Image 1 (cartoon, rainbow, N blue to C red):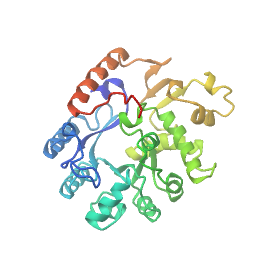
Image 2: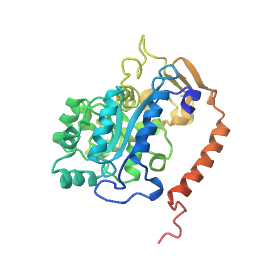
Image 3: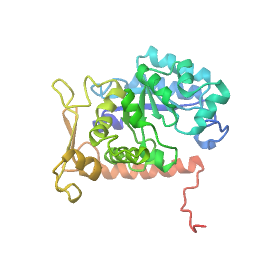
Length: 325
C-alpha cells in the first residue's frame, strides 16, 4: 500500500526460510527473526494475488529466499516451482560470505553456481544479492544463464564480506545491478552513494583506475536494475516508448560545482541529496526536494515506532559500545 500511495516502482518480496542457520553456522539467527516456512509461503502467495501487476503495473511481487543455511533443498524446490508457475522472479543472498562456499562444499560437494544449477536457481528470473565469492570460472555460468547480481558495496564494506569481482563480471557479460542490502548494513539507501562506492572500491582492489567507470556505475544503478526486474524494454533508460521514470539532479550545489562533467560529478561528488525531482510513470512524486505523495513527517514517525518494536522483538543490543577497550 505504501508503494502504491508513494507512486514508486518496486519489486517486493517476503523473506522465506525454514531453518535457523546462516551459511555453515547452524542455529545462529536470533529467535525473534526466525519465521515459519508455510507462513512465509502463504503470505507471499496472498501478497502476489493482491498486489502483483497492480498500481498500473508498478508493483511486482517476488519470492525472497533468505540465504544458504536458512533454506532447505525442499523449500528451494517449492519456491522455484511457485516462481515459475506464476511467471514472476526470485531473489536470495548467495556468495555474500566465504562461509557460503564452505557450506555448499561440505554439504553438497560442489561450488556456488553448481549448487544453484542443481536447485534450478539459475536464470534471468533470479537476482543473487552480493555474489562476492564466486570463483573466476563461475562467472561464465552466471553470464550464460543471464542470472543477475545485485552488487551492494556499502554493505560489503561495512560487514567486511569481501570484494565482488565486478570488473570481471562486467567483462564476462554478467547482468549487474546496484543494491543497498538491508538498512542496518547500508544505513542510507542512497543509490548515488552506492554508485560512488562501486566506482571507487574496485579501482583500488584491482589497482586499475580504469575499471568500473562512472558511466558503468550509472548503468548498473539504472538499466541494470531494469534488467534485474525484467522490464529493461520498458524502463532503465530514456528512450521513446519507455516509461517516464526520471530523476532531475540539481547541479548547482557546492559539491557538484563546477559541473563540467555532470556524469563524473554525480558519481564521484554527488549524493541523493542532490536529487531535486522524481518522476515515475509520468507522475511527479517529488519536486523541489519536497515529497508530493507522502507526508514525510508521518513516515518518519511511523519508522521510529516500528523500529522500536522490531528491536524489542529481535532481542539485539544496539546500544553504543563505549568505552572502547
